[in-house]
Image 1 (cartoon, helix red, strand yellow):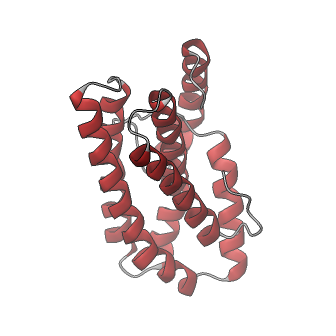
Image 2: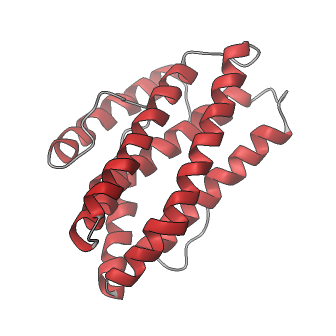
Length: 186
């Protein structure tokens, strides 16, 4: 992943977005790569970690600091839920299966749309609404949350505090055990 020189929320989130976009570009440019499933599993793990951290920290900040924060957070969480359903289906497929490429294409398109929404609306508004200190604290907390976040999609898991804060660490432990047993790099 990218080397970060700043850890404010906006930088952490946009750096993650750029990292995911690099993997998407690799998947699009090398559709016959032998390690395609490993690359897809890796990007799914990164997307899940990123989403969990956003749901635990960034969306509650939007609710707190933005007048229409509830509406924005609810929309973003709904998009996460849709992406998690696609990731769950994609996990069960193998490269070469027509459904694999169809699901991967849908995931890439949906995530790109989600990134565009966040970067053109939510992140600039949070930058205006929060102090530099608050953004730094949120960025540090997002980085910490990603370290203990699940690595596999769980579309039925709670996406709002406090339930997501309580359940995510336990789910992450189970995911990491499953990853190790399956030889999956996450």
